[in-house]
Length: 139
Image 1: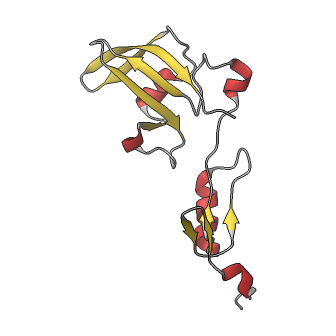
Image 2: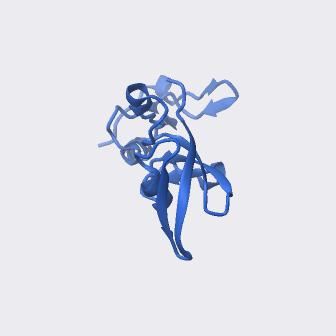
């Protein structure tokens, strides 16, 4: 037997310039993975699923140490600089410079601080990365 949904929940609405097809929103609680929210959104037909989670490590440790959610600027052995943002597996978009927290570069950088040098093993051989800057989104 199907669930009867009041018409008001199925009405579309707008949020700024975004048109949301119905009035059902899902968002994760702290510590609940984003994949679960997307699964529930698909299963129950949510009009929008918000699943951005921000690490609170910067509040506890300042912006000096690298944890989940950090944007990190680093230089390799050749002096080439790159900035990455360490995100969850589902959130990481390489076109934006995001890397998953389980990627080799993120695993090498995690827990490092500005000025630290870390070792990254690549198919072309090991590289040394120097951490130049660490920042977090504002709470």
